[in-house]
Image 1: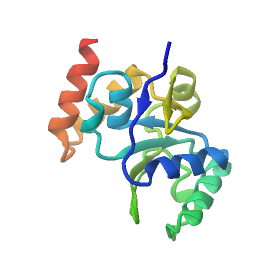
Image 2 (image 1 turned 180 degrees about the vertical axis):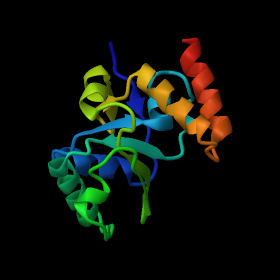
Image 3 (image 1 turned 30 degrees about the vertical axis):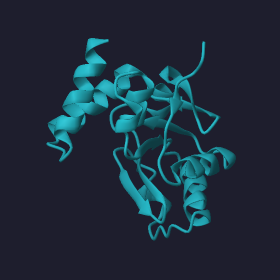
Length: 159
């Protein structure tokens, strides 16, 4: 069985390679994960969304990757070491959003995650149930991308 290949634009693959090389615990979520589950065309993914483990040690590793990527993060570690954070990283050739889990622990999400590849590198993708919960949350918040979230949710739920 071949693993689904996640397609990332710009320098997002490079950023994920830096995360992996630095030992940052993360999962692919959002549209790329929906596509990896076969519920969205890969060409319809414009950014990359990842969830990081919000432990202090992991956040420090993540902030070091930001610095190595020439992304200035002028906040204390505690700004990311908590639930429900969303950090847009739209700098240079990177176009991604970094999140921390809202309603479940990262360890639980990781345990249920599924394998995929990105640029030939093994990565983990949030399971369908976690993606459904995240899409429902985004819809309830009246996210500006509501129509896209609703379409993703419908495709995730029909499989």
